[in-house]
Amino acid sequence: MAKIRKVLVANRGEIALRVMRTCKELGISTVAVFSEADRSALFVRCADEAYCVGPAASRESYLRQDVILDVAKRSGADAIHPGYGFLSENASFVRACEKAGVTFIGPPASAMDAMGEKTRARANMIKAGVPVVPGTDALSSVDEARAFAQKVDFPVMLKAAGGGGGKGMRKVEDPKEFDSAWRSAKSEAMGAFGNDAVYIEKFLDKPHHVEIQVFGDTHGNVIHLNERECSAQRRHQKVVEETPSPILTPKMRAEMGEVAVRAARAVNYVGAGTVEFLVDSARKFYFLEMNTRLQVEHPVTEWVTGVDLVRWQIQIAEGAKLPLLQAPTPNGHSIEVRVYAEDPAQNFMPSPGRITALHTPSGPNIRDDSGVYAGYEVPRFYDPMISKLSVWAPTRAEAIERMKRALSEYMVKGITTNVRYLSAIMDNPEFRGGDYDTGFLPRQHQALLGRENEHLTELSVIAAAVYAHTQDEKRKAALPAAAASTAPSRWRSFSVAGRRT
Image 1 (cartoon, rainbow, N blue to C red):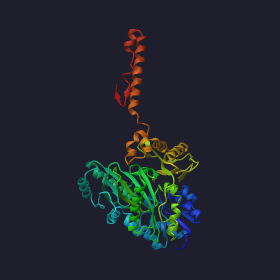
Image 2: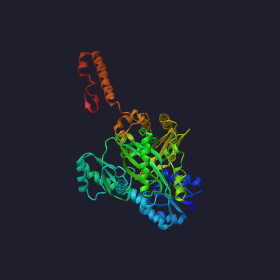
Image 3: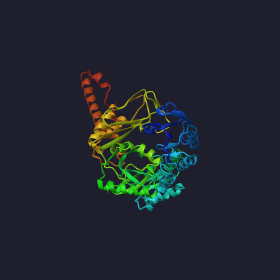
Image 4: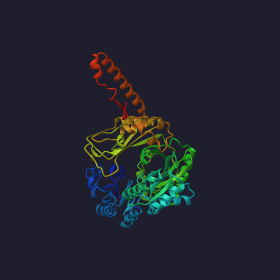
């Protein structure tokens, strides 16, 4: 296969920049596509060429296959890198690229058909002897879905069949909430992936979310590049990722890696992919899904393996063999946090707006994958992640301390971010202990906001009220009798947690 000369990056934000940086190191020209909302974005400025593909709405811009392929033709791009999200797991887009004579930097459409659609992936894994969480195929009606949920008993998980990233996913605990959760899951799935198919899985109590990075080439070689612990999630979207996983033994890593490679081989997988597992309290693991693309959290794997995964993607798309034929031993420990333009104290409400000042951390073994700059207007139309901050250190304890230091240097003005919340995670005893599950962030939410001692705060308020009452009584005692009887008492008007005292 011929060398790739020019890559169109069919994505936006930090991942578009990430791909462009490796392309430039390889001497490959880059083409950006952008919506009207992203006209001033950093990735647009950094590309060799840039083309507007439509209005802000993703369905009218970043999901327009015909427009993106037309740009590839006009610009002379001979390859397309999809990043993650948008068209990255769309088999019809892969086929359209092939028909147009453009190399798709990712797996073939057949592998994407087999694994990118979550319910089909479950069926393929069952056939390959891989353990899966009890669940269904894509369901056609809410009545059919409700019947299955009642059969396996609540709680259950509703999941989008056409994509991941927490989109179109809902945990349902109460049967009365099922119909509304079904409607919202389908609506969100359609908006994110152009596919409203939804299926159900039985909810596992307090599982760990552990994923294995796999890579295949066109010569039949498949390896894994170890695991990532992704259990620190909010609304089924990852917030903190790390590798190695604090709960995996070398034996378990080898077993999960072997299953992940078997899963990839079963569908003749090529390129970067991630096989995701749920691990229960007995340390038994179940196949969850396969993401047939580069993951958001790929920097932690790059830190501990020394591999540029995007470089591998491009080289394998050119027909090269994998540089390694067995999993490397993890070197040190890496942690990544996702910096969002959102307000954790206001139920994580997005905080779009203009960044008036920005200072990102630096120093030994710190990496900030960002798509913003001072003066940039964070749009309201897309995921509010503005950067991925990752660190490396020889041990997990040192990596946590390095991340704390890095977060203490992170300064963003003009918008609200979750930086302080992320710093609180690094200090949380449950996180530091390492044995945290997917319920960790919801369970520790108040503590992470600094509200873990609300009962003590209430006692402090009561103590202040008692002190005020004592001072009031002393003041009245010093007044003439007639005046004292009419003096107002501050005690009677004091309120604790909304209750009159």
